[in-house]
Length: 75
Image (cartoon, rainbow, N blue to C red; front, side, top):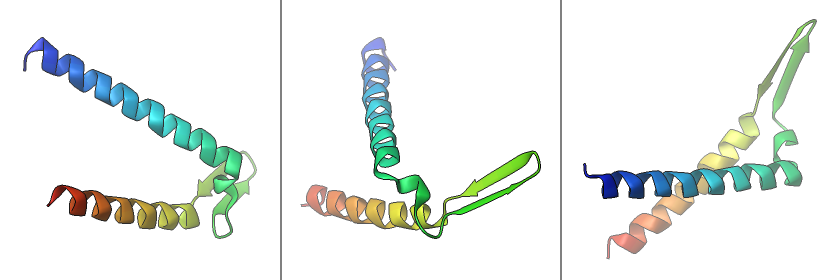
């Protein structure tokens, strides 16, 4: 790879990380971390958060987006 390709890749990854951070920030403000069905287990000196509902919701959304993108680019 030449330096231009590496620079382009780093720039794309940077934009993707900014977008992912913005989506996480927005999701936190909308309360996506406290959906019904998400488990929060805690005991003395430990805690564990298992986002079952959020994982299912993200899976459905990402599947729909991927299908739309593949249909758009397959024509």
